Length: 332
Length: 301
Image (cartoon, rainbow over all chains, first blue to last red; front, side, top):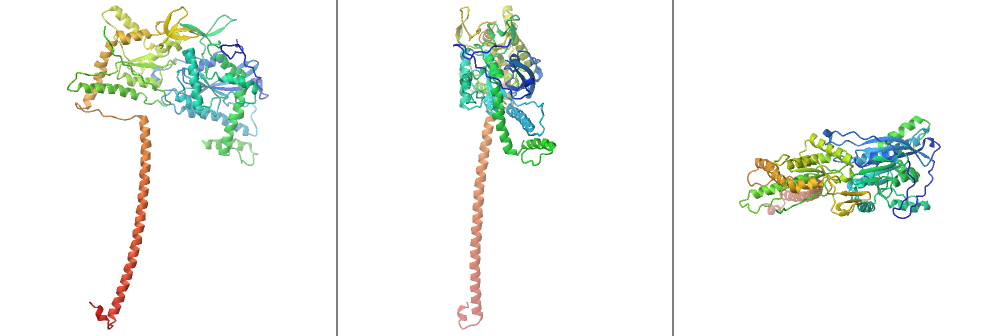
């Protein structure tokens, strides 16, 4: 039932993205590669259905009916974590998905950015502490965010203030991949125009979205990566039903005027996005997070606070545990 | 057959900010301003050429997120619905499947009831049974789900219709199976147009007029409260600049004052020195006079 490797070009000859070998980082890969994804976007853009469609099973159950009496007050932001074990092309992935529910749903959303930033920094801080320990925990699970998928509403015009601010503030902490949620509300022409305006806004405001071509030394992949970047933002349509018999299952979304096939890459970019996330670029995303984003954060943190440095004698393991976290707290 | 002068007012930018507090205030102010203009014209001695720009219907476009109304929608609709005929609409209805659309409509109506939002209720009963049935159909379809398009496209079976062309089919605007556009159009400019105009005059405008008459005398202009938040920020900035300038000037004056005081002290000191000199000379003269010298009698006066 797993989709086969899709082609990139929409009209001409089908050409597959050259699959890159996924790298095994640690010996403890038996339980799978640690991979953390965060989904951010306003409610109603299909975040939860996206996850269910990505993992090909219902990971997040449908929400209950909201209470009409409390409709005038927005729910505060919360971070719901879901753990899924996947197997892609022989590689086991221990996927942890964090759904940032409540983002942008309130009347005044200026505090949402700080909450997200604090969350991401907290994961970095945990790793910083763990690295400084004398006795490291073998079973430690890395919670650093490797990719943040941001759902843009399909307005058809351009990016809004909320979108621009989010990417601007969080781009230095996490790889951001913008996608268009509910892309089935845009016709073919509107989708092209919208993608162009979003890219134009990203260039104009110099927004730090994930640059697929960051590794310039990998020349053979560079060409593929440039083509992939032409698809940004990826249009996503999520699956409502599964039709067909046991051998020929088709994931669809049905309307009175027609039926969308999710796995057809001429109709939306879902399959391409899935392949990028779980197959071809998983190593790149993880590497960039660990080698660049985390290192930048670490440097900034240590320069500012003398975090864990100049401790003198580190014979006492317990002193080491307390000191870094308290000095980290002092920074706030 | 009669002609209608249709005026449409669009509000781009509504709810597009990160902080959307009070973003419905400009809308409410606009509606009340139109009532105010009409009120003034009514109070004139000559009332012949009255221009009526009052808003007879307000279409509120709800984003089809599939769950429920957002707090912004609730607050805005409450404020607007109390002043004008509010007709809620589900925009871009072609993103929801029919089952999801039905569920969303029900949820929206539940919230409207629970939060006591006042929306336009068209009259149902009439003498003609056909009309009553049609009215019932219209009311049960509220809020209206709309697909918007002004382009003509060709469907698979060759018809030319107004609609949106997708790779998987054509969503038709004027097809009742696809959306409620025809019902809304009928309500707005055919069946209920007169009712919308008369309820605006008899209910909403009258309410405004009564409340204004209670607090104002005949012919007095309306008090303006410029409470726009964006202006408030500018006002704060201006005020800060003003206080800074005042502080600078005060400093300058203080320094000048100090210089003047120093100058005065210096002059006083000089004066005192001169005074001492004079005193000294005087005492010398006294001494010479008192010593009885032969020249003394010349000094005595």
